Amino acid sequence: MAEAALLLRGGSVWDGSEAAAFAADVLIRGRRIEKVHPSQLRDVKDARCIDVTGHTVIPGLVEGHAHLPFAHKANMADTGDIPPEEHTLLTLLHARTVLDAGFTSCLSGGSAKPRLDIAVRDFINAGHAPGPRLLAASPELTNTGNLGDERRLHLYRESIAMVVDGADEMLRTVRLLIREGVDTIKLNVSGNQTIPNARSHITVMREDELATAVETAHAHGKRVAAHVRAAASIKLALKHGVDILYHCEYADEECIDLMEAARDRIFVAPAIGLLHALLHEAEPWGITYDKAAATGVADQFEQARRVFPELRKRGVRVLIGGDYGFPWTPHGTNARDLEHFVQFLGYSNAEALRCATSVGAVAMLLEGQTGFVREGYLADLLVVAGEPQNDVRLLQSAANLAMIIKDGSIHRSRFATSH
Ligand SMILES: [Zn+2]
Image (cartoon, rainbow, N blue to C red; front, side):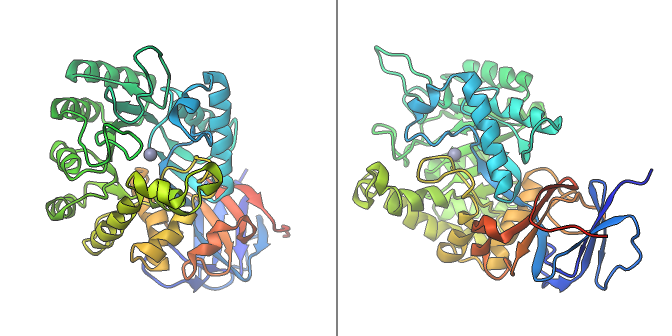
């Protein structure tokens, strides 16, 4: 029996390339896009037909720095307090929330507990629950006293991290996490604005620790993502072959040159949404602009506005998204990042949308499979009211996401179907 087909008729297609949108019908059969046809397809007898006039068919979005286990807690220790069973269910819930928001893929930037991403990825892939394609990360591998170490001398506390000191411990931990099934090892190399004795401009992780992690992950065909804010951290990450660099606000000229030289190998994501929210939208949780600025967030935001327009010019592959899952950056609002790219980082609407689609697909290791509306590609598609390539803000409203298709299956649709 032939596989059921789905015909999206009468809309326009923004295919993920630099080409302008064009009128076309899109025929989906099974998991794949069978035809992108510039004039009306009349003779598809076995297809369910949906009139998408006034809408644009675009590739599904990719969140480049997901933390699906983040449970809208203000601090890391409260996240650590969640028992693994409840935490797994919450992670699965958030997976559905981001798919509802149009994100058909998530590259995880850290999994809070070792098997949350892994279990949820496998559960979704087995077809047991809706969710995006997910590349599972390890928890953040951090050092004593750095971001994610919430312990006190008198008090053990879990967090979002595993605390690793020394190259031997790093070797064991990375091997253990690869045994458990992670796709990506996450390292906290720099400090953070929230850590009084290890602020963002400090490189905490030692070179032999970082080198061991990358060498071990790469030996198993796994990638490494790193929380790098300080220039010295960025240089260390690039020297040893880290694949995905998050934040990077304090990149100096030398860093930017090195990133350009590595642009065919690396991905970078600013996680600009969190900085913006901490400065301007976190007051209901007691974080005023002045409080955030006092810990360096305003400076980081300005530094990101210096670095990322330059990376854009140099052709470095930049991903949208990042660090959603705090009370002030709830899951499902991830598309807000596209507007930030346009408003603050010098991207056009279409460029920001390519970061979220065709660039993201390569970061997901799905080059040639997703990221474009093209014949033969997997049907990860959104049908959006209006022209999101000319106004990415449209993607922030669920009301505009008329249809979400992942892997050829309709996840959500507000259309009636007819033959
Ligand atoms: Zn993060």
